[in-house]
Length: 473
Image (cartoon, rainbow, N blue to C red):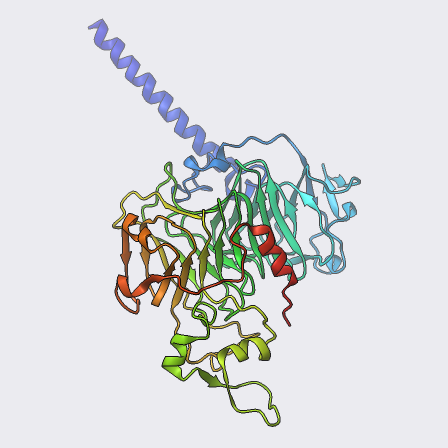
């Protein structure tokens, strides 16, 4: 009898402890909640702030600890007062409730506070390096900022970055960028991501983008569950040596628009890697690399396939030219009408040593899918009429023996998977060919032939230099 009473008491004690723990967590959530959470104080233990689908329990950023930094709060949320306010000037910030006096630096955590009346903070010239950034409801930020911590753009806020300036994401810690606005957050004109070797940044929530370059130059970039990266339309997103781009379940990489003949959407360099999932966080649903359709001019020498299908000419839609014919080869359009000297006209190039790896919970349901992005041409540079006859299908080039597993190809041109080492296909496993392809696997996968892309396959330094020397009007 005594033993039964002891057991009963123990059960009651366990239940009480469990109930107390749940009550304490609920109390913490009620005391804090979404509004209280900040990039420098994320409240990871609050399930109302960090729902289960974000996988915060497995995410590297949630395991980081940060020393206390300077918290600067934007001082004036009145719309008129911010018209010419320089966000790099400490006079426009409060620190510990008093006007800040020290310059912004890498130990600063910035908070743009919530406001019922919308206010805007904008700068096209001031560039600073800070740590964490929180943008709350009612604030619109137009400022490309360099930072080494977390960024949280909350419901009711706007983040337009800066169409003229650059931003950066660096540092040796694992961080997150979270967007809860329901629309794309454009972080900068050019966004440089150069994390330390063992550090990562994970994009969470609604889409993130850059107006132009988004460079994967170091460490690991994770596109979280169902999140989308929108890269600039006039740039190549290179995964440079030592860098990884990881797509989680439902995640997507794509351009903002198709830039015909300008640059490949993605180049995976030597010792660069594109992953779908990780061993600790395998994908449970498909994730996507959505590539642009291109002219294939360089891929086939002189537009061989297009010439056969469309007589190699397209209606000229540019300004009238005395004595000029009204039809020109497509490469004439690209080189002369738009000043593009080196069109790079396939969706993706994988250099020797570039890797594509998939960690899937079920390769029949969760794959890395390459498909067309189904976007129109960049309206600032092309119209649909100018490139009317070009098939909206994708092409990829493997310059080395990249082994694939858990991959599906869709919307591929006939001959659009170009292999420097055709024998590598024998090592591919669980590679499928889905909807929209112009033929079966043997018609899609062809030897590389005379394709000579405008890149140095020995390394990314010469490629970057070449891009700097390429003049575009």
